[in-house]
Length: 245
Image 1 (cartoon, one colour):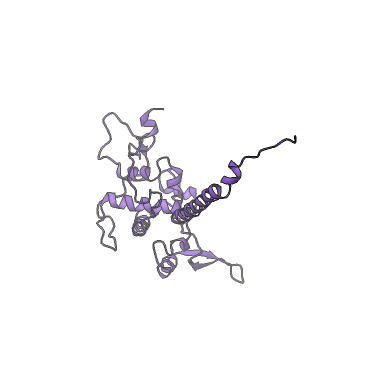
Image 2 (cartoon, helix red, strand yellow):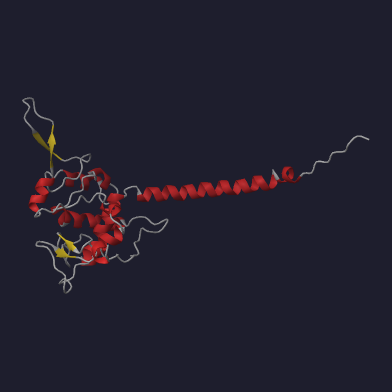
């Protein structure tokens, strides 16, 4: 397989949450959700992410409730068996843009936009790949590169031909916290959000890991003390046998 067929290897970026004890930038997660909702949600779903998981991570309880209530979900049928709709709840999952795969393909010239719930974990390169893909669209494909109809050139995508065109442009969204919405900033924020969606336990896992290190280190020091002062005498004692005369 050639490099073009495999896709250009993405650069290694210095993500703020990559360190052993570093946690997610939750302001970036909030901005990333905004980019997803205003840009990515037109084609891509988040089928495995429930509204409730956003509470305390990127939004308050009341904010998430308000966002969920903007969507309708199937409810229990009425007494006559007729289907009913209801406003969304915290327990519901974030709805996708299409009813099924066939509708998604019909709206995208046969291409199927992948669900983004686990996209960071499902792609080699993880965050680096997603960021490079979103920011890696050249103005024109290289000389000699022919693309199938309806496709776009991106060197980071395997084969170079991708159905999704460039979607991020400077000032495409207006961040509520005043952060300049450059292409790279939006790509960084939505990648951070998608990384959180793939690993919602990330911060808690690192907190538990720190606690485990503290506990195990304490036990290790105690074991050294016990070995040195309690068992040293037993280990080094000498038994002499005096045979009877």
